[in-house]
Image 1 (tube, rainbow, N blue to C red):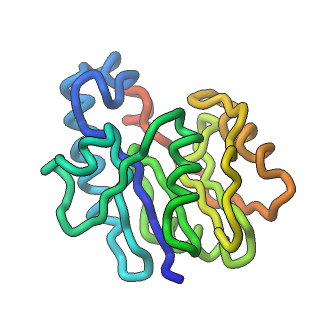
Image 2: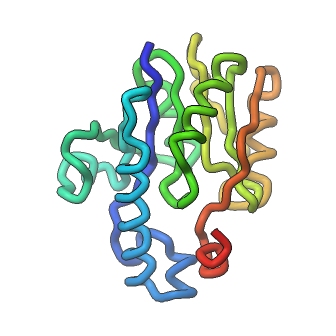
Image 3: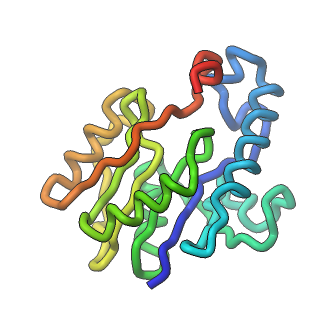
Length: 192
């Protein structure tokens, strides 16, 4: 079973990506930052130790966008909140270890991804926490089925997102790896 790495990305359009950052630095510069950050992340994380896929929203962009590299498989994120989208990706991928990451964490390296797959050799789930109470990585061993409703009641985009997510899978072996900073505001850009 091949390790699977999925990067969740948004089609970089004004008003659709990094809107909180856009309020600080302007919407066009925020889209520019996101577009270049995402391209750099994809290039940096390609590796033969895992299969890389992009989960794209809106779903039509998964098929039609010319922005993303053509040699990387594309998936539609589907409908729902972040938890429903991640659950869908976990349930419908090929069997074996999978890690899902966001695209707005500039400091992710191959070392972090390797560390997460190593953690899955001993745990059922792995999370990479962010400094703001969320997480930049979710990984699952997937040796058995993924529950249909996995992240019920998670308060997304709050300082409770990781804590709520962990409570949803409390009867499992869970590992936490390095804490990283995601970029939501101008101060996050200068703190990276």
